[in-house]
Structure formats: C-alpha cells, structure tokens
Image (cartoon, rainbow, N blue to C red; front, side, top):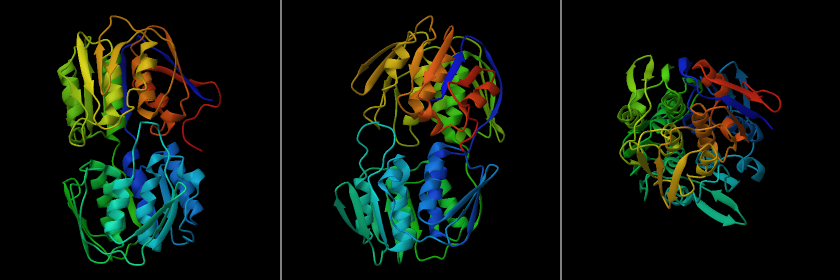
Length: 425
C-alpha cells in the first residue's frame, strides 16, 4: 500500500499546472457512448476513477487508449448494455452511465454505484427523471433493470439541483425524441463542460450553467477532439496548501470564476490572491485569521469538495471558524485524523468549529475519503516534523499525483511504502 511522507514547517514557493477536471471528465466519458466515431479527450487526468470508467467502457465493447495526456475513445464496437456489479462499485459516478446506455441501446442493466462513504447519496432523482422521459426501471436485488423502447422529450423539474441527476438526464435526453426542458438543474461548471463536449460532437444542448437546460434530442453524434476544463477542486487544494504552509505560488490553468467562493474566504483569512487568463497567484505572508462561518451549498455556493482542505488550512488560524456541511452527512470523517496532529475541532451534527492552535505536529494518519485525504496533506505542510499518510488510494481517485504537484510548489513530500506512482497504469 502506498504512503505519503510529508515534512512540514517549510514555506512554499513554486508553480503547478492544474490537471483536467475529475468531475468533468467522468460524465464526458459516459457521453462518448452517444458517439459513433473516435473521441480524443485532451488534458484527461490519469486518475483511479478515470481508470474505472475506462474499464467500464472496455467491458461494454468500446476501445480506450492513452496517448500521453490524451485519451482516445472509440465506442463504435459497443456490444453490451450491462455493467457488472464489481465495476459499478468502484466509484459513485458510475451511475452516470445509465442515461447514456439507455439513450444508445434502449435498455441498461446496472447495479447501484459505490464510491466514498459520505452518507446516503440516493439516485432516486436520476431514476424519477428517467422515468419521466419514458424509461421503465425495475429495482431487484440491488440491480436496476431499465428499458426504453422510445425516450420522449418533455419538461422535467428536479426536486433538488443534483449534479449527477442533471448530467444523467442530459445524456438520456440526447437520445430522446423531441425537446427536453430540465428545470432546477445543477449549475456547476462541469455541467457546462459536458454541454460543450456534446455540442462539439453534434448535440444541441443549451443553458448549462443556469437552472434551465434545454436538450433537443434525436441528433446524430460524431467523434471529435475536446479539451477537458481545469479541475477547480484540485486548484482549491493547492491554494489551501499555500495558505496552510505560507508562501508564494502560481496555479497555472486555474480559473477564478470557478473558485470565487473559495478565493473570497482565503482573502478574508489574509491571503493575497490575484488572477488572470493564465491562472491564479497566491501569497500568504502571515498566519491566517479566522473567517466568518463557511456553509457548503450547491454551485455557485461554497463547494462541499473544498470544505475539508479549507478546514485544514485554518487549523492554525487566529480565532475560531465554524463550518456547516449542507450537502453530505459524513463529510467530517477526516476530523479525527486531523486531531491526531493537534487540531482543535468540535463537531456537532452538521457543524464543525475549528479553533486555531499555535502548533501542529506530524503524526501517522490515514485517508478516510478523497477530499479528507487531501486535507491531511494540506495540514501536514504546516505541521512540525513528519506526517505519514496511509490508505492513499482515496487520494489517487481525484489527484493525478498530489506529491508531484505539491513538490512543484516547494513541499517536502514523497511517495513510499511500495511502488511510487506518478500516473495510473
């Protein structure tokens, strides 16, 4: 099992290029099932979740090959419409294949998806929306058996602005007859990236990034070349790393318009942040100060995926900061590991109060989930001594090589405990 060894207490200085967005490329990989030609995804990140998606595509009969940081996908030979339980359990985002397979094949058989244990994340919104488009879905023994001889476009109103449900319904609606109007849709930038990919391949989707998305179905999709947007959560992680350890850094490729709520909090905490077309610069000269309560919310609110890394950055802040988690129930699983390093955090239901301490110390800690693991790395940069982070497979689900990237910013961090990894095999 790989481990990360981090020697903290040193000021950072450097530049890192942010990877392609995990939460964008996964639905785009599912969307390739709508095409009949080769798709070249430039800037595709080498992640465990991407590898899981590739295994699903290959199991369906499709081809997928790496060419540097470009992934070539060819779905012309698709010959199955079912995904095994083993493959579905590898990641939560596997549910996104349901809408695409239905649109392409007219039927789909999958099990319930897996992923990090962040509390209940039901896909009932996905299923309700697909049923409104004409799919018949039977749930039996943990499996979903879906058929749709003919999907029909119609007005669909989501009860909650679910990202996954929005993406699934967009993909299904691309294969439906007529026009689908999706209201109360999620507004995340990754959904706009999915729209842009679909349109580049012959689709007709409008309104992504707003609460109303209009999909004109029945289009013929072709192959093409598309560059995945930069990962805003990876960018937020590296900004929080600079805030935690102090120093000067540049996050090349990061877009502040996707991170406005995160950069606003970091500025309030005392960081100097500027941005331009090339990326985001961050300078943290002094110990941070506490900020007003941070409440996670659907985009454009504060992202739940950035909550843990911001919390880690504020562990030595002057004063107390309250966090309120409004998306997932078990988003504080990293707290017990942070307290091993000397953090002062009290959790009361959905609220966690972080009181800054003078000193953090290195300790053996383990990853509890993807973003919690990244938070341990951010905290370790500000701790005295060495921290050993174990169970790093969680981190590799969302960060191409967190050791490489933090090293580029000047961190003393290395892989150990087995074969070092720089890219997924």
